[in-house]
Length: 382
Image (cartoon, rainbow, N blue to C red; front, top):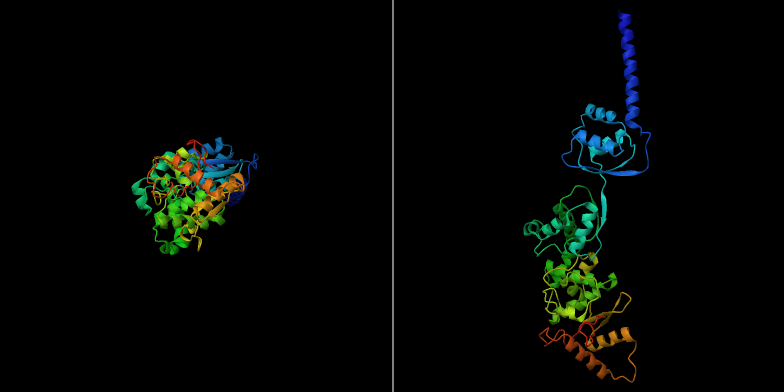
């Protein structure tokens, strides 16, 4: 009897060892259909373990559902599956799949938000990349309760969604995405900008607004402090900023060239009609633009600049120098036989005619045009 029991125990132990080894092989080894191809797989909040298992089989990720189920039950991990977006290979081992799901080793979406985008453009990118609802995103960005939560005193979050590279998991709410971007803005601002802001006499919202205009005007970072100095000089002198990007924003963010008739658009954002800064930012400025807003170029006495066609600008102290610079860029040097007085008067006269009806001709547009005009109000600006 003792011998029989001993034999049975030996057989049982042997079978157990063999079974354990076999199970371990099935658990740790990749399946026969293993492939380097990857598949994106989502576990939605509230999905049950059985539903996840069935979906993994259907997606071609899991070929050993029995091993997957027993491994989860034996280790009491069937209730620990985490929601998220995962990246699996076809035929990936059960151990690898289960561990990813239990430990939440999700696949992050790498999203690049370039400098100078408007809020609605950012919303469009995020809808595509992290599957948020762009309409809900825009609504949340203008919600007074959300703004209060983020400690932002502004009409909306335009200008406060910091341009950067983000790693977003899934799923995310619209407010969670906004929070990530605004927190990033606060970290950059508090670390690099806040200490310099007192010297400008401007508050946070004014700095962000000016930085957004600088960002929209400049292609090269090296020009930002110079552009900033021009705007600071104009603000200090009580002049209109006459910044073309603010007109484009007032027109709904158009990307086309502006026409002289566009300068008449009735909007608080049209800095050809109103003095000082617009009510808010026109895009999301980057760190360099924010720094430029509080650190304009030292000793700069320029009040004008004009694009030279290469992406850079020519800067001038006086209106006359500005007109010469524009003529030089468009037509080349003024012929010696053309009197400068006649040239200047003709430009001034045309500008006054184009901008007739904008009002307040004591200074600003009529005396300090940002661009030369023609007699045709529909003519494209240079």
